[in-house]
Amino acid sequence: MGTSCYTVRRLGWYQPPHGDPYTRRLPTAEPVASFDTFDEADAHRWALEADARAGENPFRFGGGAVFFQSSLDGPRLHDWLMDAGIDPPASELRHHDWRAWWDAFAHTWSPDQLAHAWAAFDKVPFFDVTEDDPGEPLHLIQEVRYVDRSSWFPVETFDGTHDVDPAFVWAILGEADPEGGYPLRAYRTARAVSAACEELNGNPQRRPEYLTQFRWLRTSARRPGFGRSGMFEAVSVPGAVPARSGTAYLVQRRAFGESGHVCHGRNGRDTGSRVPVRLFTDSAAAVAHRDELIARAASVMNPFQVYTPPMSGLTEQNFLAAVAALSAPLPWPTGFRLAEWREWWDLCQDETTDDQREAAWALFAGQPLFEVCRVEVSDG
Image (cartoon, rainbow, N blue to C red; front, side, top):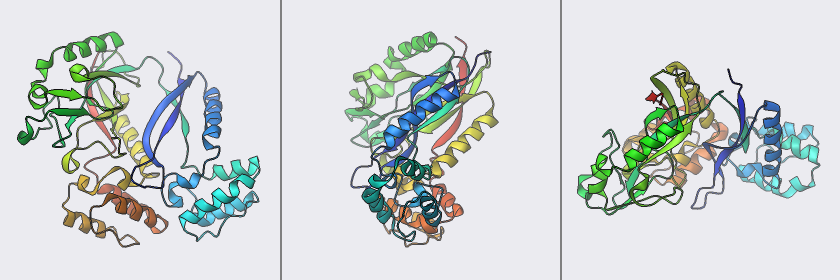
């Protein structure tokens, strides 16, 4: 039996457009290095973390409340800083006062004081270490999802679960979602998945709706290729799935667009793009991992940074009624302007309970950040 491998990953942070002063956390991760032992991986992680922290202000990450930077509330953060001889601002000050205070005084602290201060900001990591399963990863073939950018309707998926809008059948431009796709089948070897991918991409008649819906398909800036050469692609997925299993359970996350929102079409409609995370042989283990990832994301993110109100599937009137049921500590916005909702939820955090946070995420329960689906596994 093989031994585990330890991977250092760069965690996802995103600077939204249109004036948001905060760099927001996304539930994404990019592998940067692998090691045979945890100690080696952890040492590399902390070296990268130190470089990423240099000159940064933790209060500009996550959102406009201490909740998004630290598991400590304002008073306990105040005491933590005083333990290292750092004179913090009054704990009742507004969040931007904490941010301005750090900018003004952090450069005067000793290296030990700076390290002590950063240790409080457990919700602002830039890297982490994961333990990978021994053995080779599996290979998943997925269908790249395209959206008609003129009508903003997604094209039908391979299994027919998403319909095109018949009013726009002559639209000329289809643009790929920036990442992810619709999972079709997992393969044991890279050779087998490459052959299957080549066969699917070489026979456009298998996807006739592309030929009628679009005269030309274009990928977005973050995906290589042009034209119809990239309808299907292969990606590696970690997971210990024994030979001759036949099926596995795939934990997958929602794909994110260039705006930082989950990929969507008109009126918040799901395009179907998913990014594979890990394969499991047991459905209960997959569900447990999914739930862990959802809880972890909810503890560091503002739901209104990735979802627009229409993605709840509710009318404006019903959405506002559902928000009223949260009993939030501050008056809520009256329209669907996303920036107002994001800022409002930031400002609510100092007086918001965990139950209220859970209820806010539940507004978008129909479009969860992570899901589990069953996929067939070929031993070829």
